[in-house]
Image (tube, rainbow, N blue to C red):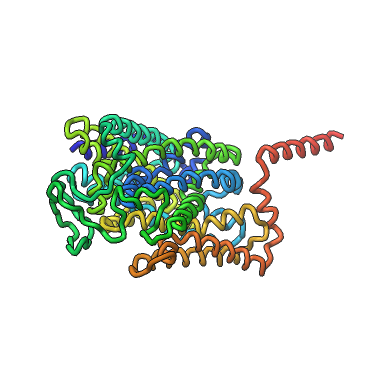
Length: 553
């Protein structure tokens, strides 16, 4: 009941704060980019709120329980992605005058076909990222309140689509900034309480983990998937209670919490024996994928000018860095207190499971409620940006556009994603999210970097490179899902393909572009991205004064 109340409170607050954007909703620009008048401080809080998704809030801690402390490299890559965005993309993309990534592609290279392909890629990335957000809503609410999975999914779809349909990007900005503060507080305060409450013995165990070989107490495990362990087959949905002192089953392909490989400070993708390659692959995908996420790129179009966009990116980095201090705390405490989650497959619920594990009284339920509220805040803020990017691609980039059409598309898109999320309870959400990052890194990252910094890029080169990046990254992920016998470094690159697909996309764009010739206006279009707006204003004023002086003479 506490969890359901907390989720309902967050959704009501989301709709209430979002109503601030309704009055200013008159044009497509208002809907998609908040009329380009968002201040750097408000925008940075909104960017941080939008970026810190359910994957950051609960997924990162769950990865620590499932795959070991080496999975914290994901957080390093997520934070570092904003450094690359600050250096390479933030100010130029705002100066382009575009409202979406497909807008930028057509404005820079003059190709309607490239715009359409970019819109399709936006659909792929946004859908892959949105489904895990709605899925997390259903799972977390079912764990803390016992409601059916579909209830949380439906609540998320209603709250997100309602907020966007009413207030567009302006409403999303207010909600995301507000909820960044909300979820940071709701994540930090329980983390501090947990560290203080668990006692010295558990803190020592968390910092110096011991391999999980026997159950310390009678423990109920609910298996999410069909698994075999030590010759015993467990069915999906089966509930097994292991007696105190019973040996723990060992799942093939997963590190046992507390084992030497679990404690290793590198991420060995799929336990294939290439931890350094796996770590580099994760960093490559998360750093460059962040720069190519369409809903994050859209956020910089809401800044008044390029300088404000750069300040927004700079202010966002410490906000994200502060938040990312806490997932590791939940992860290592989860490895010490609820290691059995690695058996069940429900490691992404570790954050909300910990408080009642430490205290079964009202404090545990209170902090579980706060973490549930924070989780729903994370789901709302990320889903707002993703649904806006998805709807913009359909109605603005692929269709004729218009404010009414955008609003209808928001509601229709939310319903479609909800239908995709309903059967996705047992899917690997981490796989879907990393697929989204790999596609973003392999398509939009080369397009933005070369489109901003290389005048020789042609529309044909951009088309070829994006197609190669999309096909290679998606095929690799499909191989991971379908071919279970893959082992060694090929398995690492299949599960984390950005290390191969991104260079291939860059080389294809460059090679095909060198075979052609950019139009005469291409250099001027690129230079516009790098000329500071103040310089333009001073030049215009100077030219105006010169013309006035000539007329006076």
